[in-house]
Image (cartoon, rainbow, N blue to C red; front, side, top):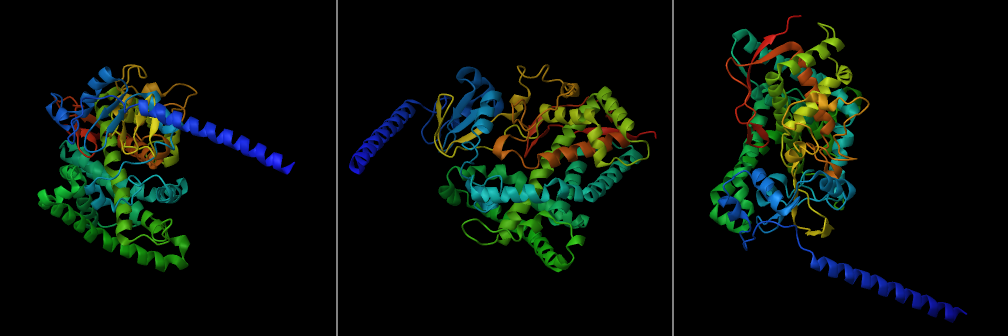
Length: 509
């Protein structure tokens, strides 16, 4: 009886294994018939780079817009050693990032300049999808970005707001138009510095940190050429490599003393934890890297602090400028927003953060600003964890998968009059707009899925808080004889080609 059972079991097992092997070989056979998504002619080694250079349109988005009509919603460009795939369609983006989020949650290998700046690359944005990324992201979201911790920094927002208001009052008194982006960038940077290091540092120190950060940030595009041929580039572009290392050393000389001072303060305050507001740097001192069991090095802590400062400064300041530019351009919208604020907060009273929840038109203005002018037109490139069949094509493991954020927010199939600034489109009764894209993607300024920007909630709070206070305290108008130019320019973010200048006057209380 036992012998017959063993024979029968073995026969069944063989049938199952044979079926599995056949299914696997059939799948591989099917995959071998598929290719990467279509795109322009590939030139060996150089790829599509020469094709892009020879195109009459220098902007990649314009090029991709034309290619979409020819090749469809998924396009491949062979730039460098690995293909770059661009997904332009809302539903395909949702299928990739939400329905198949685990497959599309990786990042492409970091380019050489990024490895120098990001410690190969120990940061959240560039980390490979795995235990280290989960640890770093969980630490960020559950510690400094947790709602209770964000609330504990309301004093910092009031302090930064007062700095900004005082700077703007100077322009009111002098009658000189204000170039807003300079003030916005400094205000947002001050706020992130407090959250990162837990201290209201002197302006001189803040300026030093800002200069070190910005020098690296704005010059990274200059060093992108080093990523194409890294070994050869170290010889041919030796001077550029030297400059890159010098900028990194400058950053270390500024940030290391602040990190060391914060570590010492944390150790002293252990006996009185109630008097100690936790900063982002504090959360990093005791983290241990998975599989290695060691704590983060000083350089790794600095890299993560640098990422935190960069991630919430330019993006928020840029979005704030775009929103204010549209409120200057559309005086009716500005006055409607002012009326809502006055209806919630009486004259002379402070706008509390809980008051923002009673201002639906304010939220609509902020969302419309992010739809019409997302600070970045592409989210950071994704990568698949293994070769994936997607929409009838192979997505290779080493490919960079890009998503066209700005195009999705301006798609006339989804948005009526997409080029117009209409906050009312977000005020449908009984409907709360889901900016996370969990059910469907209509726009994705913060990305969606597993790699969605962890600072989404903080960014919306900052935008609503500062827009409300700036409109409540000042009336903003265009400089005499000038309309507001909404032309764009690529820097670290997508900024106004001609930065907003406005006349401001105090509201009559």
